[in-house]
Length: 479
Image 1 (cartoon, one colour):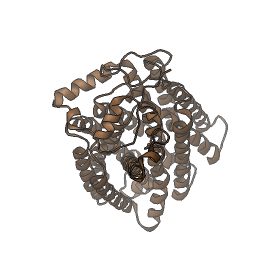
Image 2: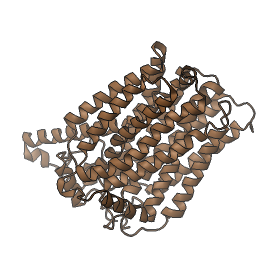
Image 3: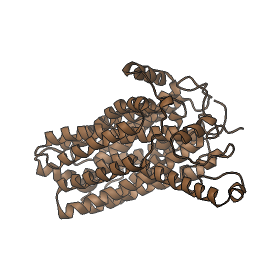
Image 4: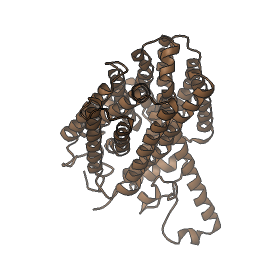
């Protein structure tokens, strides 16, 4: 069947308007915007040779520009893992230093997550009205200030409040990165680009806990926030200097709050869009249950050191990144995105079930290795589930990318914020709550996927009432 994705004229228009020329041609554009950075700038055979050295230099410049934008968007997407994961090895130390119970200290994660959720709901529509750069730079500036103040928090209550502000400001990077992807890419190219972003942002979970564990060797948890502040300053400088505006003035919304609310209402009225939104949200809840509980499960229950925990966390992140690249480089374009998503959800359910059985003592005292293996499998499956839910949802809308991205991010972070305190409800000495939350979230995600997305059927139109970019199942069918 005819592939429509990245070859639609609107994609070329959006890419050129942003000042980032990805070098797509009228045919084969899906390959030209494969988001790998290596394929951008390709055209028909012999064109570059015929055009001479000047055209070759322009082609190389376009590839470098595309790679730079990819790295900048990856850095923005890596903001949440940096803010969360570098801080994770120090959670037990924060509990002792501030003389607070574990459940209260876990609220520092919940507050940051809730802030990121609510912030996206505000910044997304703002970026549809005023463009991407201005809200992004403002958010990064506030993020740096809040992160620096976290390093001096004298009480856990103030730390929770500052983490909320940090999350609200950090939301700008998350939601606008997704909106920029939607500005520049479509169809299969968008799916591949999200997988590429997972490779880049996946480096942060690999490196961040390792850095956090090493920082704790020479300083306390406050030093972690000092490092995060420096990272925020560097990222803000790169965005200021290198990230162009990707939303032309002609494509911006002129309405205020009312128009933003109407746009979101139209999106939520589309049942497949809402189904993918909830599927991704509850899948993320299973992921965040792991993020929130794993420092206590690995270090307190199984007696691992902060450095061992950081190593295991990094290995799990490697699994997520590797499977994400398998999704983008091998599966996308060959297998229906809905089928790949269904397979990912099935693996998450199986891994969460195994964790629950081991945590409940069904197999006796299993030790750390089997539990770590199950967590590795669960995290790796996220490399399939999360990028495909985002892609399938954004493929339902060709306009209001900021609002759509905000709804996706807000739902995921709010549901994750609810899951965070639940994992500690039975104390610090059992992993059963973590496994229960993960399994329940995965089952609900699967129910939303099957019941609302109905992957076996075709969806007519898009969430904003326009013709679909390409089929929702990613195989080029007219939806």
